[in-house]
Amino acid sequence: MTTNIRIRRVHELGLKSARMRAEAFARSLREELQIDYEWSGNRLVFKRVGAAGTFDVGADFIDLDIVLGLPLSFMAGAIEKNINERLDAALS
Image (tube, rainbow, N blue to C red; front, side, top):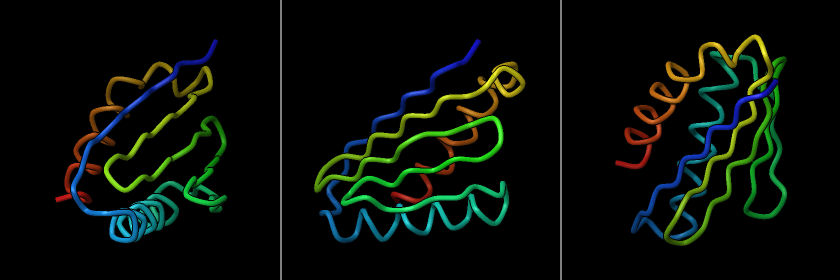
């Protein structure tokens, strides 16, 4: 059993600034949660034990899709809340 989390944010940052903020967001997650990530165009692909996903960055949007494995699925609500708060802070 897996759980999907999908988050979309519309912004007015432009592509370059949004991508820089997405990179900073991913670096903080790497340090705190030991995720591995890499860029493929304007898509950041990330993974760690029990979770994987993508972070699509556009000139006026950010789409975050996360798939949580079974152990983390039980904490999906708390994980989604934390990511929403952190993403809002990163984009402000």
